[in-house]
Length: 378
Ligand code: ADP
Image (cartoon, rainbow, N blue to C red; front, side):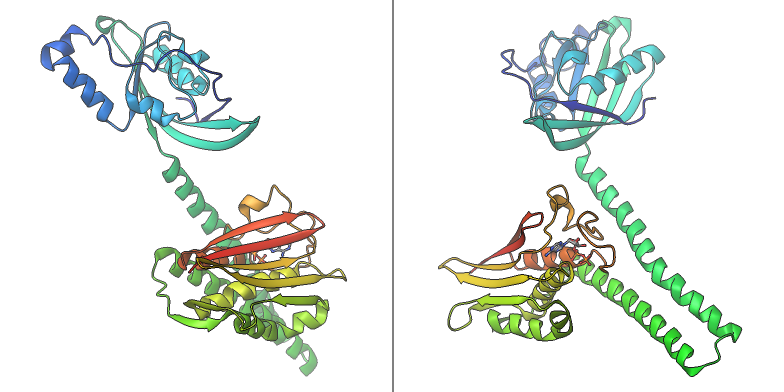
């Protein structure tokens, strides 16, 4: 059986031939079920179904087959192997015919636009050879399992990353406990240094666990929003006060642009505190170089409030932008290894923003600027 196969396909250039329909079922089928009913039933099933003859030429396909491969329709009386995106399925047919048995495998198809893969979808394909009575060849059933595959990948990544992030501080604490038990530490000064390090790492573990619980509450929909009307400028000012130590270390220029009366928002103040804390803390933390300028602004229209947190710092590389809101993701390039973080901050921001029915966009240019824009419907 073939392992997962990747086929990267360009969208077809103007295809004139029509999508294949069931046209000539065998007389055995005709005897049992009326042809129009059979055709209608096959078009109703969500799985894509197609038949190829012994030479690999497509003779039949149901409606779902085209819906499953949105950028290309399956062409009748053409070899399947020559149709864009179908190479992997065609490979399974070869396997099934050679082995003369049913073959099942996951197939990944990359859809391209402008030369770049813009979407990758996962399919579960089952291929079975047909006997000579039915003209030889094979039938293929294809199911889109992309959502399931992505969920499974996120689950695996989460377990791996969470274990890794917790194991590091835990093993450091464990090491210090061993040292303390051995009685090697004699002076009060060394003892205090040991306890300080243990406290620092246990705080880090607590923060990771609290962040993970917040994410899980927001994801499961259990996060009951305690909405109230509050002044956004006031919320930002409180956050800046909590971050005094970091602000003193970075010495940034900070500009706040808000309507005269501060701008009101109806939302859960606890989560908005966290949103602004994570965004402003990131802007300060990631940019130790002098000359940092931080702008936090709010603009209100009849229908929405647009909140922006922007800085003129190192920026986020374009290839990292799609991933920064994922749990545990941290940019490696252009960022100092000394900057600590869990990679959970922006995950919380995105989920908390979305829990308010709002959206968040990220615009960044390396070495120039990073800008997070949140649009909250009013
Ligand atoms: P972390 O705990 O590492 O800060 P986040 O989820 O908050 O995790 O952020 C993910 C990554 O995005 C950070 O590790 C950092 O590399 C990058 N990042 C976030 N905000 C900024 C910013 N304002 N400037 C540059 N990089 C940023």
